[in-house]
Amino acid sequence: MRIEYIRDGLVEEFHEGLFMQYSKPYETGAFYLRSCAKPLQATLLVDYGIDLTEKELALCCGSHAGEECHIETARKLLNKFKINEKYLKCGIHAPLSRSMQDKMLLNGEKPAALHNNCSGKHIGFLIICKNCGWDLETYYKSGHPLQKAIKNKINELCEVKDSYPETTDGCGVPILSMPLYNMLIGYKNLLEYDKIIRAIRNHPYIFGGENRLDTEIIENTDNLIAKVGAGGLCIVFNIKEQDGFAVKINDCSMEARRIAVLEIINRLGWGKISYNNKIKTLHGQIVGEVKYVP
Image (cartoon, rainbow, N blue to C red; front, top):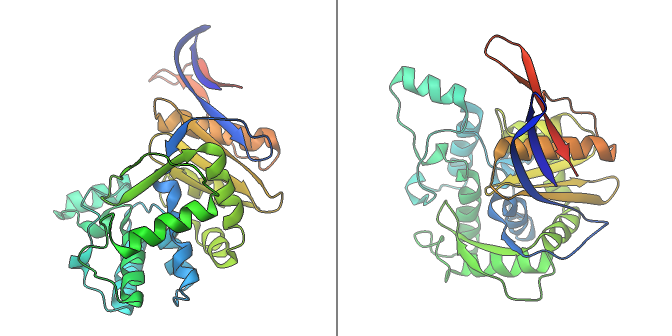
């Protein structure tokens, strides 16, 4: 699979990658789950019977854009479980939302840990630790009981039998790797968690936000859940059809990933999501197009 940028008949740019459908598997090498792990990690919140609203659970499952609705939900969640924000070890980056970035710049505000797209996941981690009586200070370390429980749970959901590399994700916690098919198995088994599926479907903007591909997919379809991950990864699953697919763009281009994923959804008949594939000059003249090549 590749995405071609064709300008006046010449392929000026292309991005190659992998596409795998759950119902038509083949062998691949291992890739890190990155943020595609978040809904799988959040299953522990359900397993431990922790009382969360759908909105709160959606935040814990997603990669939010750091907008006011996300920060408000995060703060309420911390207050609900009486957890101090100082325990968050996800690190600090500017909000993914450009609108929020502009607003903060105009107001002279600096980003905090809650603006990190992974802060919802980390809050969920802290909630589990408090529920189980585990240390809050070291929850992000690989030897912590939480991270051991997460590893076991993901390997169980994804039916991983072999050993694959592990690393530290961008937000500082351990992350696993596996073949694409095992990732899809994990999302197939995730469908058994009705509360998580409802939370994602009913609150796609809390789950992602402004210009987030997974939010766009969920908002514009009737039966799909989706999750993006760093490294050009995206997983989409059709709740009704019990089928899904994974896309991995080799050079990690987010734009190429978006075009590939939306085109595949449309070709499978799982939705009709329009997107602009025209290449234009600054004057608006169309000089080419972006094309999906299976």
